[in-house]
Image 1 (cartoon, rainbow, N blue to C red):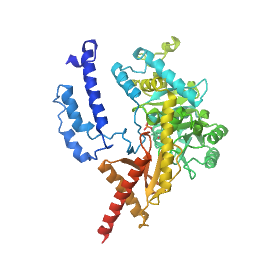
Image 2 (tube, rainbow, N blue to C red):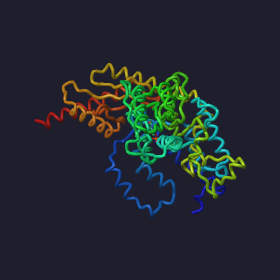
Image 3 (cartoon, helix red, strand yellow):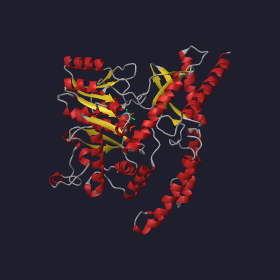
Image 4 (tube, protein in one colour):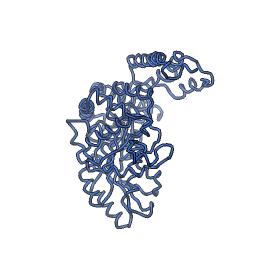
Length: 480
Ligand SMILES: *Cc1c(COP(=O)(O)O)cnc(C)c1O
């Protein structure tokens, strides 16, 4: 059994085994003609349930054969140009190479004595990101598991910086279309049920700054404490970017922590063409970025950045076995003092490999391409009488709804759109997402694949229309 341990003796087996796995995935990716097979959980479950985990197959070729049946054949493939659903990007090859290296070497980025150069590489990427944001010379940050964790950590720091004797008094302000992890974080941080004040958005789904100022004023008058304003740079549903400079001014006026959730919009940090859309982000006290959303990185790759490195101390605890205080005096660098995690992946390596191979401009150009594609998609939808489209895109999402010519009942239109999304998923021809706008069901394209074309979008819109019409046809039969 020791022959499976990755060590000097078994280096050749490692090479052979991983190569075999890479060959399989490469063949699979070359052969997939649809983003999904359309299999149901009920159909797939028995194949997985019937496997006896206490009876190993022994050799990896057999395991890969089995994996074909239980996973690879029916996985949802984000690299396919007709995967248009969630904030999952196709990944760049240098980052996948980084992934292979980091899991084989298996550094853990908590302490220097578990990572050495890894710690410094992560720090350099944190500095690179804070410089791109413009957070100034005292900035710092740390890689996290994702945007949700980054938001949680940022709000933890904001809570500790807030001046109050009672958590019940703290309030967080975020737009009505901000990410749900803001509310989840408030809950985890022990704030009251009503801690998150929802600020209305304008026609373009951007936070109304006037409403924000009004709520902050009310908060002060009620003797409550404004803990943080969360501005979203790229909302999950609409890609809308809150007016960052105006929000920064209001935060300044009320002495409130400004957090910018740029989990999605961070792609613009690498863009030459559209960087100005997130101007004002430099005023933030903390920023969330998800490289795994708009830097074409594999899951997970994310970071939380702060303007003032000293605020990260709120995440610092010392353990004799790991990071005793004397290490600080000895100036031995570690990242665990800044992180909510202890053992932590060297995700930064993927971004390192990407920047060293392709450079930031190339990543920015790929993101620009999907932003431009979204504009083409918007034009397509706006000109198509079958569809109602919600907002002109600031990033790369499109939210729309099929409007049948002959039906006026909004509930029936809801059902037709829900049906179309499900039927499309079951066909495997394309994958789209859905959301609600003003209580009604809409469909969503999240465009993150530069390989997707206008023709792909047009073809998927035709498919959706056909599924919706099929539903409505059957529903007429049902009613009669
Ligand atoms: C996706 C997203 C998050 C959560 O990020 P995860 O990496 O999925 O945890 C937070 N905020 C916004 C705006 C997002 O789009």
